[in-house]
Length: 265
Image (cartoon, rainbow, N blue to C red; front, top):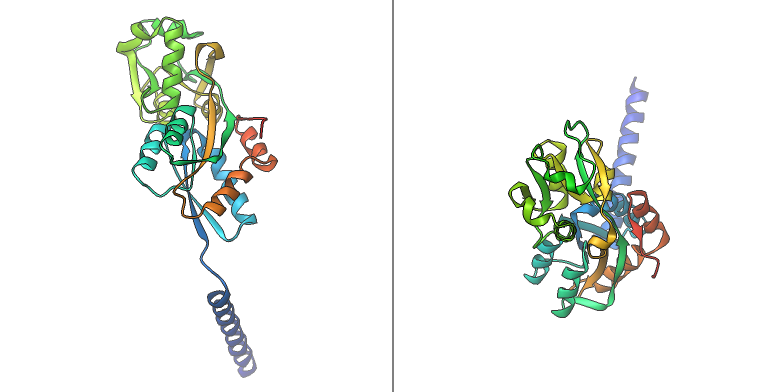
């Protein structure tokens, strides 16, 4: 029994010494990881959640901190001086305006991804909806889209509905959401009988079904530009992340979630 106690005490002492040695080594030679603040369109959430640990595993000195939201809202955050090293927008408009204000480094900005716009309805909907025109059916009471002023998916939705001659007539039915994920949520929960979202958002949900994909001629091209902010506190690291997100490993993950990587890199 005494022998077992001595062995236990010896093991505990060695463990503590090793732990202290490791802690001392880390405090002497290690530095806390550099935090990179990324502002990304809400529709990128699933893909970025997979990509973040991949990047951090090959860049242990860096930690990615992501804020998601509508591109218009994120643009305002950057303009107001919020911490940001990298911005990924769901439309060119927001990136272009930040470039004009010298808030994005023009040497580190490019189009990263493409997407498509789709009309979705709840999986178990009773009303028959086969096209955008069917949204005029009196049985369809609410149609969810993003705020056209701040949510790119909402801007594209307005363009498509206007092109089809439906925008004015659907005004009483429209329910505006703060971002594309909220549009999807409205349809999933039955708070709207239909909604207009990106194909990538619809693909991740088992509670909605795609009715039709909007013809690309009805709206502006759906591109996701990426850019390093001019006021980044860690420009070298931000440029590294920028380049990595444009490489094949990241492109493969984006493709998995339905995005189309832009070929010209």
